[in-house]
Amino acid sequence: MAKILMINPIVREEDDPKHIPYGLSLLAAVALENGHQVQFYDENAWRKGEKVIAQVCQADDWDVIAIGGLTTTYGSIKKILRIAKEVAPETFIITGGGFLTSMPREIMDWLKEIDLGIVGEAFVTWPEVLAQVDKKDFDFSKTLGVCYRDKNGQPVLTNVRPNIKDLNVLPYPAWDLLPLEIYFKNSKNFLSEAAFMAKRRIDVMGSLGCSLVCKFCWHLGTTGDMVVEKDEAGSNDVRFTYGRNIRYFTPRYIVDMVKTLVKKYNVDHAYFIDENFMTMDVASGRTWLKELCELWIKEGLQPSSRRDGLPDEQNKSGVFWSGTSHASLAQQETLHLMYKAGCSSLVYGIESFDPTILKGMGKGVNQKHNLEAPRICMETGIIPIPNIILGFPDETFQSVRTTIECMLKLGIHAKPHFATPYPGSEWYYTYKQSILEQYNGDLEAFIEDLGDASKITAVISHNFSPAQLLGLQQIVRDRNLRLLDLTEKQWGGASALSNPLAKPRGSFNMVNKKIKAPIGGDLTSVKTTEV
Image (cartoon, rainbow, N blue to C red):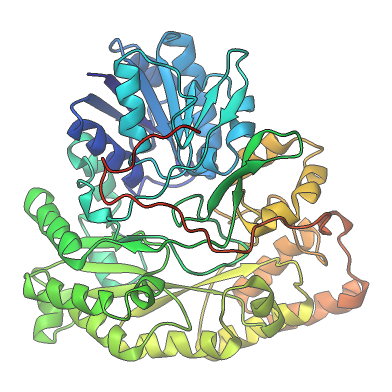
């Protein structure tokens, strides 16, 4: 069986490691289930640098070195791959995850160290690829869901691997391979009293997908949104659509997993990394969250403070949890039940309060939703965490003013993120030419510059420059309408503003249709077919 080294890259160099590599540790468990030998090096947790990475890559005769992550980890992945190929030149290198799936041919052009890329959902493709490596069969031309190199070293993309239908067939992540104590040390955060008291918080996943079509967001093959089509040169490339295949683990699977985490690691807080809780609940016919909460209570995971009606600082047992929500989909009855079961906070993607901005982003919310949702959430006892974004394509002084006025009305304090055209999102394709112009034609420089949208990269605002957006970010953070008025007066009003670099060029080519792909019921039922 294959001897595999899996490496988790650094996620945010400026921050402490707070979130376990859920996807990679889940794939490690899949590899172990299929009889392979797996070692895991978590550079995001250890932060030991290049010398130790080199030592790890030389520590054994690895058959495979595998690495993956979001686009924002590109810089770290690039560095690790260079080291791996230098010290272990004969080892087969496999990559996957969002950074590759969003633009597989470009990534493999830039990173010559990659031997094979797994594109989209990897639950079936990953063990299939490992089986081929184990047999020394490196012809992947008929393997679905990969980007391989032809005899000339050029990347070739095969057809899409269908998503699996039943998530419950997946094993739990390989937690024992991770340095969990490092992550537990950084459990505490300021999202709620319960979160601030957390000593052993861990990430869990209840679902894959989201039914929304926000123009700033991406899904990268996890929701049935990805197709492979010929590009202008006649080569296969990915395209992302409005296709949706929403899937979620059963409440029984989730609760049993959390009970296992309590038994093995004494966790006290579960953070759901789902894209959006409420879209899952709607997809289930409004039964999923209700069943999850009732089972959480029935199986003894309910925090004692919620059971006994005491303040959370007096809690003695149980597991608090937190996640994400949607302003137009959260129902008060459901929120009350979530609070009772132990939900402490929900991140709401408010983004903006301006009607024009909200209409243009494609999220399906209006100003009324965004004003009512935090209040309703607070009334149930759950802390709403608003996410505000600045620098939308149609952002104006008036839209900024509207957002500040509504923040003041609700008592919200937030330092806004910047609207960022991440690869795979609608805005990436709409503004790709503008992105290239802003980075002197170097698309890789843009990818290396991407972070968590807390800094400015490529600007897509038609009216504001980077310097102006930096100033507006502080004005919104301080909710300072006086400074906003003075700034607008000095700059001559919104009608005089223009940022020619951010004007969209060309047409957006996302396919506006549902994609109905063949679905397998378990990890072995989706067979490799000829491409």
